[in-house]
Length: 245
Image (cartoon, rainbow, N blue to C red; front, side):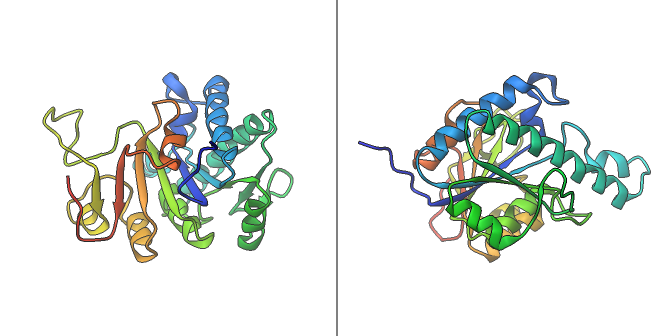
């Protein structure tokens, strides 16, 4: 029997560090190839997938402006870093015969398409993976916010937030061995308790547009597919009154 995904259209948020592997900086081609294999497995299920990649493995805007650099300039540099990562992921996917398009919020027509909402949806409907690069095209907004915004624009069923932890905890598990993981939690609880799922703008966007978020551990191979098939892993962030720890 063919495996059936529980979502039709998904947006996957990857950190830039996810492409760097153990080095933490730069791009590790073997790591990117492994990610592409996992994404290919998901695409073979017949669902539509869009991806947003951060740029922290190359440049993090906050590192620049916290040391005196102009905030807008530092953030634009970060947007360009996401473009480099997006092209690397596109290359890895196409080496596995996965049709892929990179769309950028800052025009650079020689290397990628400009972001056009209707064109992005059309690509998804044709079975292509769409990678959204260059953030929102504006400084002061994170790539988490980009993912939430694009999820709303393309009417995604869910936003998958890939991290280096099994889910969302009530405190930092690396500092507190008694930290408790949430299986499910409401948007407002995330905001009120200051839980570092995403920045508050991204969380609020998902809340306002009723886009569920699944936070899961990317370090376990196959987890992207497990989430899409509906396995109970990670933490689900959504509305409702019956959320339990």
